[in-house]
Length: 403
Image 1 (cartoon, rainbow, N blue to C red):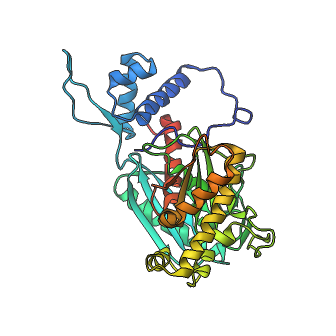
Image 2: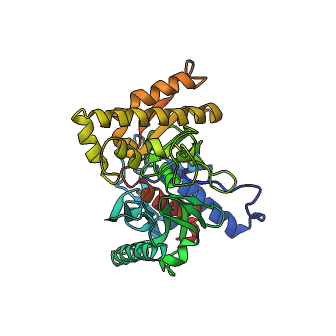
Image 3: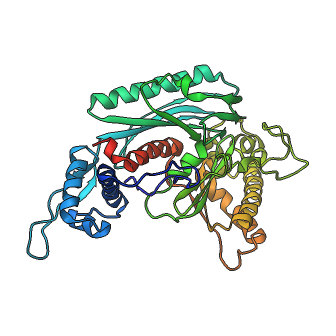
């Protein structure tokens, strides 16, 4: 289920001034309050439960719930018999296949688009493999736009309303403007991606792929604060604090792949020397293992299962380098959980010992509070899932616009 608490809160220093509540404004805020209660609950709530949790009168809650149900944001389950006298309670849940969000992604190895509904179910998905190193952004983004249009038309034909889309890119995205400053592994720089999608009738925002993938982890039983690190050709990270994404001043933080591991190391695509990406990025690990740089992670796993000395040495080097970068981060920020996504989710069994050994040696607080290291749970296309969730989070923040 989509949890209401995901996403980025408005900065109180830059958020627009909210005027004194008039009657219609109060109704809108109460509508949001009721939606938040239902979507944030671990178990379905009844109207009486919502009234208790929000402090609103039962009659008010009933009216607001009716609006949310009629608007397709909430659905009612079969009544549950009460343990005491009175009418059976009617559990409330997010509505399925009503309002949907679209997640889009440009990856070095694929283009993708995914549709998610308010229950968190992925109801349609398209992924096109390819090689997009040094690609033409005009051509690539136009194709992503075609995928989005196809999915939006299919969703509309099935009676669903498309709220918008989020585009995930592997590079520095200015969180204030949506402009891509640089994506070294795509060979793109100084770019406004949205017009190139050609989605004039669909609201689209742009974000860094690792940050959206990190937000996709905010489901189920997860620590409220963690560092998410995702590996593909590049290595990106998202910092989540109290279930909120920490962006920094411009949204450019989390570029852990360009932390210097060795000042005498190889030159990186970003122009620097000895970056983590050159030791623990997927292509770097493949080369060290004696495989083609663009080999799928499954080929590396087969080599590891066959006890290939080159593959084992490559994972040892990658795990040690990754542990070094993570240890510096933990010492600076004091986070107790690290979630590894992308290729690291599959490779963690062969990297865990080296990463944990370095963390134990180099993190000052490790003897008192060991670091939890775990694999990501959001699946192989986490950035698309996170993007779609962010679209739906905006719907829940302003439910009056949809009912």
